[in-house]
Length: 342
Image (cartoon, rainbow, N blue to C red; front, side, top):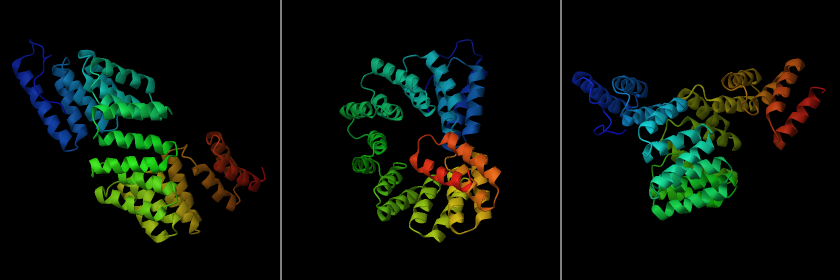
């Protein structure tokens, strides 16, 4: 979080209120560092009540809300900071990053473009545009941003990480692995880099080496539920069902609302002929995310086995509505519709 004196503090704020607000901001910084973001946000809001004209406090509130995953409110906080200091590149950068998370790509690119006009040497404006352009499918432009960023800073691990994601999306797995290995060379503790290498190795059918990198990621962050699920799914692929089930249940202890963990556990239970338990897992997936890919189809398959055709057909129709043009899913749905005599 930002600190330092406030250039925008209004002169007529009573001294005792001013001091109390400053103390709240200091407490917010300590709470933020401890991961107590809800409390930090409350302290910042109280300080802003006293002085709403401090762009730094709005910026810090945005950072706190972003850490909480409350991206829409974070955008509002950043916009208030921007209104008070329109040329602050840090505010515009965080605003662009958060808009990208929300899928507001055009507005995000506008923020990064404004930064470039204010300070063409601000490297994050290029580094973060790699993500925005990749999400838009504009991978060639993302690569241009990568090389522009390297001209300003050739040792930015995040640049290599971001362009690695773009290369992976294009199926260029070897180049992606190189970039993520470069990320780890520059920052051995960079989050998710080992897991992304594992993803690419899995895509290349090098499952044994992929397992090694997933394990390396979990050594760095044992509480990473997403990587725990990925490793569990990989072990299922390798036929090591006991180890996989242990990992998936551990993932649910870390994050009970992980739709992917419930889905993979349902798949595992289905393989073990534990149909009732598998059905409960797939139903749990749909309670968390009613559009989770494959869950309606898996549930329909179980219902068909029990002769519950009407319910199965409803789930198949829902899966068909949302599956797009995925050829594997369409093939599976075709087989299930035939089984359902449709």
